[in-house]
Image (cartoon, rainbow, N blue to C red):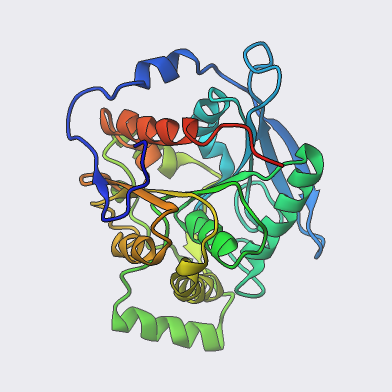
Length: 315
């Protein structure tokens, strides 16, 4: 993937061990995150996890990356992703979004549609003050929507944008939308069962089992959170041509949690000289947690692209 791909998605191979996976695994070691808390302007405290590369291998980090998790989950589920990124020389900071994981805030409730976006801006500002450099931005699912909006609305500049199964379109029937509008009008903070079917997250049964047993995974959703999705997706799609940073999209073609067609649309409207996409035809939603050999193929695509963008940042 040396050249930006402009005409359509790259389709990952369906078999075989990707080049570079064994090398990446050899340089990846268990790294315990440093946990801290950051208070948002409204007083809500968010849990932060920061992973740092091995100083013996990287006396100076090659960059920093902010990681934004998806709906109902938490940043602790990205330990293996952070270890791969640290193996490339990156500092990684993830955080539990408000109302998620070990962060504060009412569970699965937002006071306004841009609350998650505003939180990311505060996390970003603190990271830039600490590390004095533009970060990469990686978002999965809802986190991918937030990251896409952050970059395309030019809330802050980013070194590059990486999107994993971003929630840029949803399959919502007319009856579902009607129920949503009623709840949004009458009970926007009412928690109702989350419709996510864990069996559709990954082909790896152990991933599904861990997700179901994780006490920090939320099992409800509210109308105002769904409304933040609906508004955010429309805005991100409209703003796609405004992207200013290099972008890599990693998309599961068999995703039934979000509609991968939204990724095609967003990619098609992003600047051709900045965009690259890898399409995993048989991948479910959580491509970083897919069954092998697909999981290794996803990480190979991620690491290969990042290596090409880890030259020292100018300025």
